[in-house]
Image 1 (tube, helix red, strand yellow):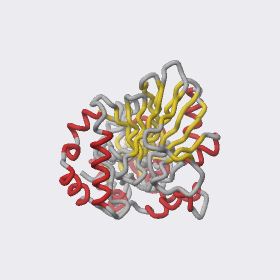
Image 2 (tube, helix red, strand yellow):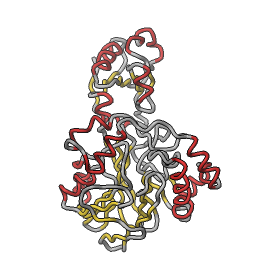
Image 3 (cartoon, rainbow, N blue to C red):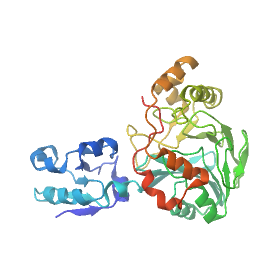
Image 4 (tube, helix red, strand yellow):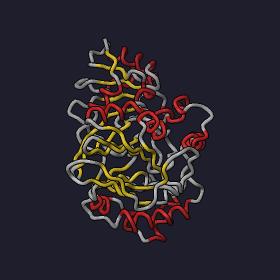
Length: 363
């Protein structure tokens, strides 16, 4: 016999001592397009012949697109005496799995919300009885629950840029909470919002004075923006990741945008102190996510780890432009929807989001 495991439980165990062995039984082309980073691909039709590749000393979780093929695999594996679970809903369910980790920054509390199947990171930044939310996904209940757990009312909602790989939940969250919505007008949004200006500041209440400062950092998009939290951390959006920098090629102007990105990084982000914590909006497959640790790194660590941060401008532009790759699937439809031109309610467009994050420059 085998059991079904929910995506949320799987997310809570990855990167821990109870980390299961993941066997993805889809075809290689499906696996190559999108997978859980630690999974091993053994197509269902080959599983019986390759059973020796599956360990018998830890729980095995079978994975497929929607849970059907993996249920067949789980049944087969269970007959060998292995401890087996089937990922209920497969990769479709994994795309909607969230977890969160909390850290204290300068007297404020920051909750990093991780959408595991997309590599999307969003944030609640709270002090006193209020919170700001940055880069929310469309599942607004996730942020409402977090705010309730911490005793916060959501007062303001922000995006770091016009997203291309996933649907923004900023409008929806602002509507359901009555919060104000703040966006950089250098990107195009055709719905009401409060425009951000470089250097704008927003206060949160509490015993410790807390401020979120805005820095315009064009390069990934024209309106890319980072938020400096209490002078101690930056919510870096898609400008800077822990494993790379944001793609400058999404607007078909890779070289021009790469120049902008270089200047944004060197004139603004890298001008901050080395102990500044960088908290990005995405992470890729190479990043290990642990339940008790935020995805992030100090600016000093990133200076040492990411060679492109030490390039001169000409070398950086050549490096970034040369790594242009095809746009993310459904890019056009997602951007159009996030601009405010969706032909259907955003919730009806969830199919557009299936697949991994592709917003970083490839190493």
